[in-house]
Structures are given as C-alpha cells and as structure tokens.
Image (cartoon, rainbow, N blue to C red; front, side):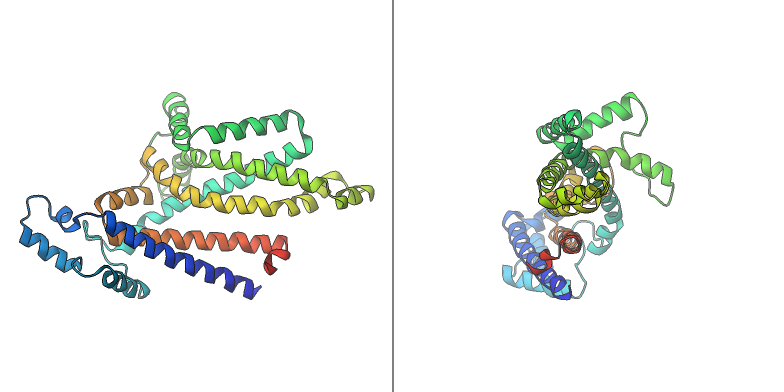
Length: 313
C-alpha cells in the first residue's frame, strides 16, 4: 500500500510541475504590458519601466520562473500586484467557501447517483426510464442555466432561498445551508446525470456475472447480494468518473459563484486572470492542483480498498 501511495504522489508532483510551467508561460505570453495595467494609462514610460524592473518583468522568462519556484518552495507565493494582499491570505480567506460548495456537490452526486443507478439497474421499468431522461437533460443543459433556473423558481418565485449572498457556517449553520443549497444543486445536476449512467451500466454488467447467480442460489437475500457484492465491484468505474467530475466542479464553481454572488475563489480567479495578476493566478493554480491531487489520491485509495488489483496496476 505504501508503494501505491508513493507512486500516486510522485505522479501528482509531476502533474503539478507541468501545470506550473505551462501556466506561467501562458500567463506571460498573454499578459500584455502588466506594469502599464498596474500603473494606469496616464503613467509615463519611465515610471512603467521602473515598475517592470521592480517586479522583475525585465528579466528573462526562465529567470522569473526560477525566482518564483524558489520562493514557492519556501512557502512564499508573493503578494498580489494590484491589491498588495499576500497570495496565501487571498486564497485561504476564500478557499473554505469554494470547498464547501464543491464538497457538498460531490457528496450529493455520489449519494443520488448510487441510489438512482442501483435502482435503475435492479428495478428497471419507470425508474430506469427516469434515470435515462435525467441523463439526457443533464447533458443537454449547461450548469449555469440550471443555476439561473433554480434562482428564478426557488428564490424569486417561491422565496424559499435568498437569490444571492453567503453566510459563513460559524455565523449561522441554518442560514449557511440556505445560501449553499441552490449553488450546490446547480453544480451537482450535470454530475448526477453522468455518474448515474456509469453506476447503472457497471451494475448491469456486474449483475450478469456467474458469482451473482451462485450467491442467489445459496439463498442470500437479493439486497445483500446487490449492496455487499455487486455494488462493490461496480463502484470502481463510478469512482473514476467521480474523480473527473471533481475537477470539473472546481471550474464550474467559478461560474456558479458569479451567478449567486458568493465570495469564493471564483471571484478572485476571474479578477486576477483579467488583470494579469501573475502571483495570484499562480497561487490559485498551485492550490487547485494540490486539491485535485489529494482528492484523486483519496479516490485511488478507495478503489484500491475495493479492488486490490488496482494497487498492483
């Protein structure tokens, strides 16, 4: 198991390094005159040149990247070029908000998809047709349209929830639940459609195996066969799809946070990318990469627990 974890962590480090190199190069290629953006159009050329020298923008790209890597290894991701706020503070102050949305969405996807997928595979009939219909709807309609529709129906028409805003959990758990319910639902709908189909397909394939007939012939109740044996064998592919959706949820949270005016990483990411605030964007890339790596490691460990063959692959 230790070797399995080491291999996964090593691949994660390689992925994080590749993301950092690619992101740094793309930001500088498309960043334009960053010193001019910071000082404004009214600044004279000498002042702009002095600012570029202060930020190290007049150095070769490899030297700038090497300087950033050296500081990042020491835990110093610098400060925002526009606000002056330390990058670590800008990210950690909003990270909990985004993670609460993404975590809630991934839990909702897992629970609903397993229930619908298992019922669709074992009961068939109208439940299976409902699952197929939801899959089509989830694939066809973008997530931001779901977000707008949820606001129109449940916030502006029924007045069950506030249309915008966010209340921290520690301030009021009830109000926090009210502010995250609609964003979490908007994030989860597309994932539920995809993962439900994967669970359904894997369950149907697993139910056709000989061991299922053998277990049933021994008089073991059908629900025990499904939940204890079939679902465990069918969970691997569904977990892989869930891991892919987690990455998509981080990107989808950017749009959903804009729709619901939630002060998460999405607002910071949009503003920093628009301005060309390279230290802040790079900090966001690293933070997002670490979150994805940790989540995928947990998925791999779960798959290894469910199927020991995975640990040998």
